[in-house]
Amino acid sequence: MTMGKVAHPGSPVLKKTDDYDAVRALALRSGLEDGTFESIVTAYGYYIGDELVGCAALKRDGERFAVEWLAVSEGLRRKGVGRMLVQSVEAEARMRGAEKVWALARAPRFFERIGFRVASPDESGGPAMSNCLLCSQYQKTCFPAIVVKDI
View 1 (cartoon, rainbow, N blue to C red):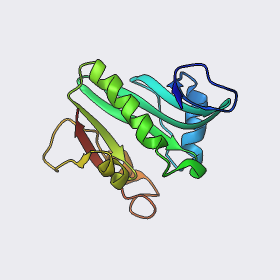
View 2 (spheres, rainbow, N blue to C red):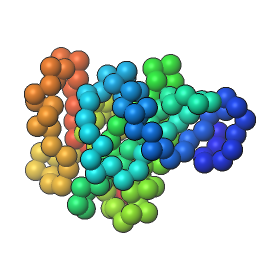
View 3 (cartoon, rainbow, N blue to C red):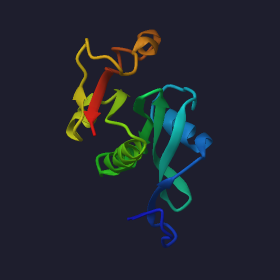
């Protein structure tokens, strides 16, 4: 696997992307709710050939950095793609001066496996779950948590 280098056709490549239409399409196919790309400072895509099969974005809101738009095609889940995408976002956040990175996680156990922890209720600085409370999936098919990682 290469990062940002020329690869053979069909070889997996992890690289920065600005194709937010493809990111949105993959995220929606993966069951995420639609949203905006407001405050997104960069995004990464995992490609096989020309097909985007994994994505994650870094959002900056003041001094808070968060993983957003994390999605991996169903057939590639549990193969390390999500971990690589989050690590890329973490590295970008660190380069921009972040000490922590947050996520509003649909799959908190995934994030815990890669070094995040569930934020305590009194911990400030993270994203809000207010939109989750209005979502039809909340506590039915989605059991989100706010997670954080010191980087």
